[in-house]
View 1: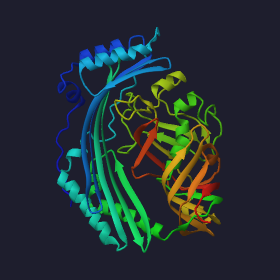
View 2: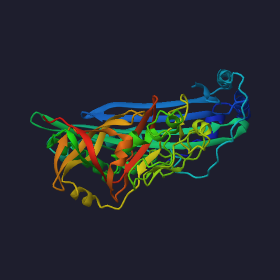
View 3: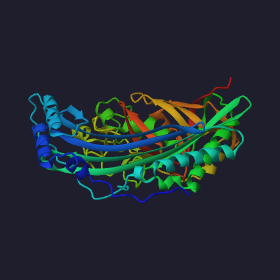
Length: 483
């Protein structure tokens, strides 16, 4: 058993940002009031973050890091323009210099400050810091156990990599007039990668899990062994795989992590900024049938302990369960405060930023498709010849056109209604808006991913979740490596 220590009481936002720094709340509010005079919107974003990462590779501890960061970002919004200044120094002097800088965006603008977001008393995850739950030696011992277990599991194992990482983020958003919202956000992740080989051939498999929890959810032996077993299973499947054939074919997507295709190919195109600027393939299509009947897509930041969840977003707005596509019709966009105001609607609680050094923008939280009525076996049996894609690696998407390319890390041929040989090198090529119309069967097995997603946009990365049921997609282009 891995030793899990009792948590000490974590410091509060009041302690971290005021008692420990010598800042006086009333004076900070005065700086914010001055900076946002005659502006349309804005806030001060205070952040304190501790993070760590340990990587075990090739039978030894390869790297270990621990970092503490703190700072603030001050934003002023006038019309469509944004003034932003940030600093890693939590002092009144730094804040006053930032206030002078952001006021430059005003340029004679005379606005009325938008009303503050609604407050919430809910808590979607623990306030406790996962970083204090296990000591350093226990974390190293865990990674060593994972390495030994994987190597003992199969003589074909040639390489094992394992990592454990966590962070504890405390934020406070202060608006003009002194309104403020706070949130304390834990986040952990455990990853395992295994390389197996026979003769000159080597293949790999990987599996990861995570969420807004403490480490103990994942580090008990029955838990981490299951994750190692899954990484090894994928590697052994790939060791027996054959080159994928290229061409247009029927594709069945498995449940859970394959929802990353939905996230990239469709989700980004439903973010408010792209639609306000009319650079999204979905711009101007509100209320129209953009997907096959039965397709319902949700973005939900309110799921307890999930990687993409937030009690409040980074503008202080409580997250929501936002319906984006309902029975094939486009019914909603993901909004932050700025784009919502300019589009004459309300924020959906999707204003997110990587850190105090970044401005918020509309981003996804946990994005998934609801389940349908078909049994997954029924879907497979309906396919004479096709591809069954279970896991994905990287992908690329063009937001304006909706075109995407995704690499399959685990896929199989479907022959005469049965799952056949594993294939490698398969890529899915298509167009986001078009692929939604090609969904002909939706499974009743909707599943969320194991908690490993990180989304990149405009140079900012944030944790996200994805999910979907088994899906049958007619006539999707598959790129392969077979001659």
